[in-house]
Image (cartoon, rainbow, N blue to C red):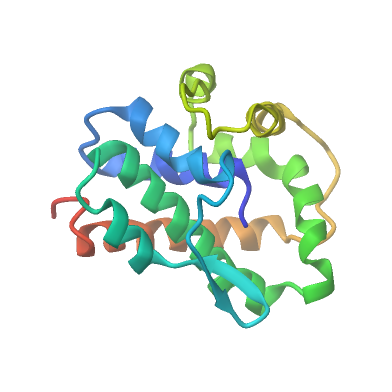
Length: 182
């Protein structure tokens, strides 16, 4: 799945285009699935697992709008990452190595989409027993890592293009699913 920075960049992109009433809830929803066990509603996609959007919608369509809007953004980005990027551009044996590349590019991703790092502590603060504290610590730490090394699996510019297209597609999907107004 894409890095935590990719999810935060997506949240920043959507927030800038939509009327999000509670930005903190929205950002929290965007990172929540990676901080809890079984937060992704998985279904099989060839040799991968991807979020089952219909299962999510059946369960949460009428819940707290901004948190679940963020949650849906996360699931859609995960789904597009596997179906439109990984399955087409990454050799199966290299998939796990992507996570090493994230530590090299996360900071660049957040800067590209003008993320304000002062928000980080606010939306990583969860009062939820299902949230794994180790996952919070690890994901938060990855946001600040900087490196001059090139990724070994991901082509950064190609990945950036994928993210731009995916963010546009997600925005359209959020309207289609009734989470955003036109």
